[in-house]
Length: 319
Image (tube, rainbow, N blue to C red):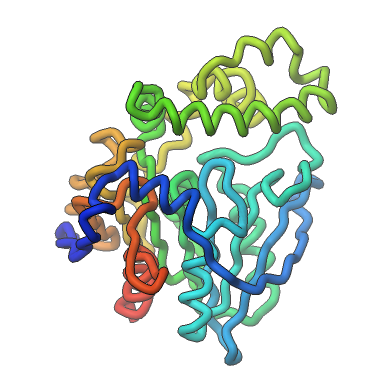
């Protein structure tokens, strides 16, 4: 599809990518009543789903997937859920394995290409026999997961009507290289601190899988993926994980209408993360590249973000 011309125009302050990113991550608040459901996964582990509902009976559902070290109460997913609820659409804010406040049972956890857990969630929802229209909405890491899911298979359930991917690191190696640059040191250090703190619990529970010596070699996000993410999830090393899990290679095969919104001033994204060629050649893929917005920082009026408004417009326009 042709590239979409963006209409996003933030105030002067939020034209700064750093300001919009930090404000959205640390300052924004969203009030939303959620009900938690725990589901069992095929491998014996579990994850938690945070449901919120429309005031009317609905056959429509949006599944919201958070980013790296996020969870189902982060404003960047609850904001979308609240908006969709107000328009007659139920919502699930998914907590990836180990992200709901309780450690998961297995040595493995979640990662950018973990579509097996997404499959289990969708099977669980379809078994309810309630929802005929299901939308997938992902932020950052979660955006990569949903696009990979939609593009790596030819048997996407008919109930899946649309995908919306926000601030998606479509090329994981390129994005990781950007995160390791001095301009992003604040972010990368924060991510690494959270990840290694949680990995300490794995070190205690699974000493046969991770030694203290290996743990102590982790100094960067790439080290973390070399030592833990890749080995825990069946990849050879960090590079193998990045190559096989990047959604970019799967975009040409997507047949479900899908919208990507990546800001041009997103400091997390490399040039390869803007799939212009793929969008032009795939009639089901829509790419919008606002000049501003940083990383998940599309701040709008009345605490409704531009990407959330565009997501609702998109699912309405495709019917």
